[in-house]
Image (cartoon, rainbow, N blue to C red; front, side, top):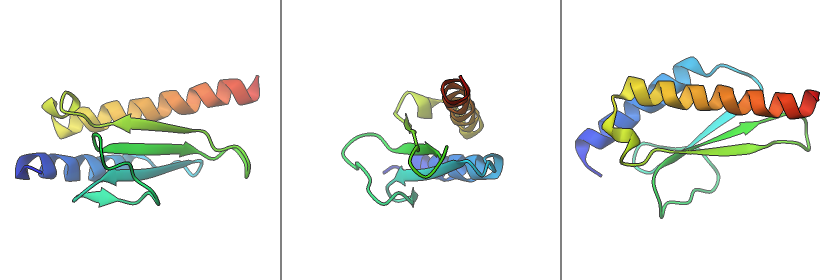
Length: 100
C-alpha cells in the first residue's frame, strides 16, 4: 500500500472513530496495514468499513462501506463525512423498518 494512501486511511479511521459514538452502532474496520478490527475480513477487494446496527440480540443488520480508489481521491475529511452520512442513513433506514 502506498504511504500516502495508508496515511489517508489512518486519518479516515481516526475521524470516523471520533464522530461515531452511537451505542447502537458497531463500526469494524477491514483496512489491512491500517485497522483490522473485524473478526473476518475480505482482504481480496477494496478496504472497507463494516457497520452493524444492533437492534436487539437477534437483529443486527450490517452494511459494508467500501473505500475504493474513487473515494480515496477525496480528502480524508470528505471521505469520513461520506462514511458518517452513510452510517446515519443506514440507521435511519433500519429505524423506519423496525418502528414501522
